[in-house]
Image 1: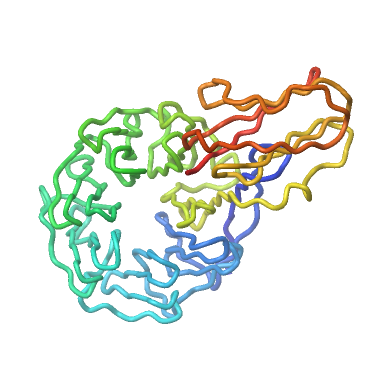
Image 2 (image 1 turned 45 degrees about the vertical axis):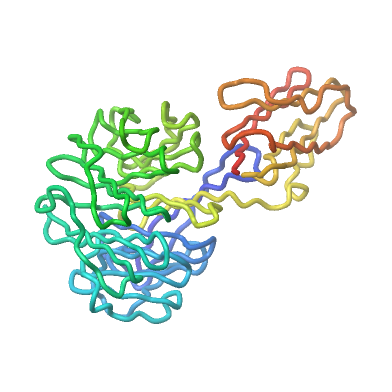
Length: 414
């Protein structure tokens, strides 16, 4: 039995806007030392991990059990719904339609998958490794029963590691060809065109919508490239002078995260500037992050790293009344729910009678609303805030009374 560190970050009802707590995750019967361990969470309980072998968790990542009895090394695992998923070895690809209870070999699907993505129940794409320097891209129009080779520029010497495919047939591929390359399709992956070519190798990337996208560059000085016009133009952004970017994810056009070596960075302004959240060495583990994503309802985020390291970002909160501290101090609790759409409740406590001011600001410091500006007696208060006429993004709630002042971050998702 081996043990690795599972780190859980919960953005919830605590005395601080964010709290990191460390627990142990157990892998049974043990795992290969996989420097490129990757995985995903289906919800707050179910998850899958390629950590040498194929592992599954049913308790949010505390315990991981080998899902298939043989010790075949896994190259890829991915789920498209809670029931439909695939895993791949160097020789075969297997499919499940019952949440992993049963796996059947797919004779028509190429082996050694680097990634697979579906736009809908019929149209999908995959990348199959041929060698370290080459992968083939295939597309399907019948839900994976048959796969045909796509037209790809420089197909004989390119490797694609990650796809993103939209329901309208547009999609993106991130990989390398004499450096890094980002490809675009408008026909569900049948044909691809080159939209970005740089020295950085693009192991990951993410498009929030048809226009706003980010490519993660594995090269110092070329950490990220951002587009706001569907890939026609790209602007370079340096996340860190000391880290290589491996993957990226955006919750909104303002809020996003970047995996860079053993660190995670966060942005509130669409990727223009980045804040260093944590470093693995500081948290007590030596690992490089590999992939980041969110569950379908965006309630749980996850970041997997080498040798089984996992970070979980939880936006689900308990009832705020149960978490209000009983003391003679000022408190501004995290709004509930958060993220919210369009209404949320803000609860605070003041220990002394006095003038109370409660305001909401947008991400650039402009005042959006004044919720309270009056004399109040000591006690607990709750105020409703409605963002119906506001756009999605990060907002800040500031409580002031006497010499006391504190701020909480709120996320509006529409």
